[in-house]
Length: 112
Image 1 (tube, rainbow, N blue to C red):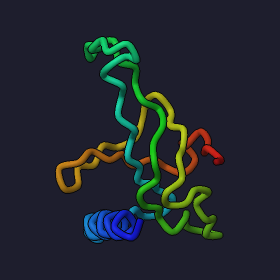
Image 2: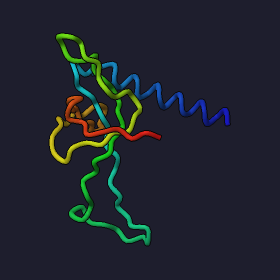
Image 3: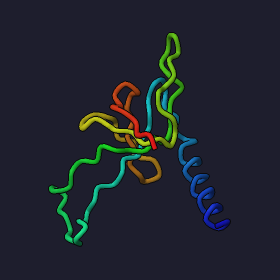
């Protein structure tokens, strides 16, 4: 149990170090998309064309909000969100793909 907690926090610290070099501005949200299923439940490998576009993501970093009246961003780090099919800006940090969206472009968030 303790070893699991230590490995979780060491992994989390590694992610935080990666984002010290990048901070979203204004109402931007940096997300990491979930990976697409490459194998069916029966064990059949799916070709890339058959894999659907993944619209769910985890929020990794959040900007301070938009200028003016400083409207805060509606999502927090760690929340799972639903993204539009198109849009976002691809950002590569430490050889991983992330996407940058405006807060208003995010369609919704999942509540556990």
